[in-house]
Amino acid sequence: MAYSQDQLTALEAALAKGERRVTFGDKTVEYRTVDEIKTAIRAVERGLAEQAAATGLVPFPPRQIRVTTSKGF
Image (cartoon, rainbow, N blue to C red; front, side, top):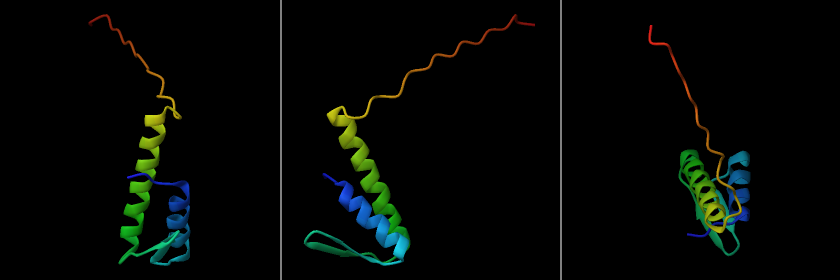
């Protein structure tokens, strides 16, 4: 599902205010608990990150190669 930054902002604002009802455009969702809102925020953040990675807007993290040696004592 495609998410927008507006949806994330609305969810975070509702969480900050302690509200359980969130409106995105013409749709209204009422959550039962604060944990459900937090789960929804994580899902939207994950979706936004996946969309950004799929479109190439976010570069991949640099690779690191670590070499360790020892004398074997």
